[in-house]
Length: 396
Ligand SMILES: *Cc1c(COP(=O)(O)O)cnc(C)c1O
Image 1: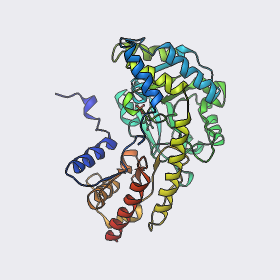
Image 2 (image 1 turned 60 degrees about the vertical axis):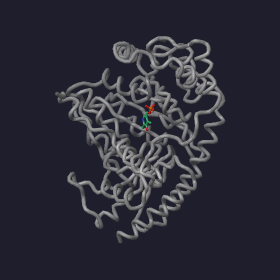
Image 3 (image 1 turned 90 degrees about the horizontal axis):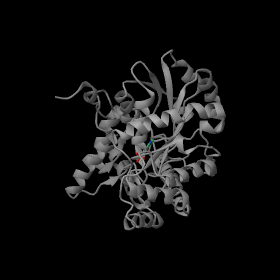
């Protein structure tokens, strides 16, 4: 009964582990959950109040498909303030989450015969979303020694006459790696020479440590800005994953086509959530600072604990709330699964033996590693890492 199109799509692996962990929790098992890809903080009060006010004011009807002017204006001001980038309202679209905006972008930008470079490790949804647009994801391994970041040499080696675009995600999910201005500038030469369209997934822009300054490709040069589509949203920055508001900025023709697609599918994102997002983006930002300070503490703590486990190595993340340590040392002690993956059986072993939920690296295209989300309390991090240490000792 199902189409070939949908048969090639597997459920998101990050959601799969969450389902299994939740089932164990329901049986009363105490699970330390490092699987979740969302902040463990509550949505700030001022944002909730804006939504409640919207309901009370009767702001509960259809809105313009691509977002209310008030929210678009907040986004325009945000790009000006944070990124020194000038966009007009017609260059912005608001979607039902960043994921939705990205899906619509791929539908509008890519088609059969187009190759799109996806550096590994990648966010789990990029390849299936490209497949749903009939495009070919070109999975490009990146050097671990370079923090799993793409280099101009590696990029060049994978270009063909069919290469249409490139996806960049900094800070990265799952590695937390951050591209510096110099690294982006080096990639920019190749991008400009081949007129590649760039999807810049900036969703973790604000979750950045060690006093770093965020930079994306569009900021480097006006020509690059024309080729770049910036994805951002409120889910991660303001702990608003359930509200489903994301946005995308770029070429007006593309935004208009995305708006057409949206008008024939989902229509506008939720009216109430749009009001809340406008408050999130233009209201006080002190809750973001507090959250980032806490994430930075946890990053240092989890890195210190991982460093004590023999054979485990980990790239130091500069942002987001993930670490992506290399567990290959332990793979000789376990059996690969049918697909030849070791990270999946090891993550399963750690769930069953240590009652710790993690996401296997295979879902991100890097089987050597396993992803930890440290969007959980300091105490749970300590407990979880102790349990992992114990379970790995048993393997040895
Ligand atoms: C969470 C996430 C998104 C989008 O999240 P939404 O909740 O759909 O806005 C996009 N890219 C990456 C890398 C993410 O981790």
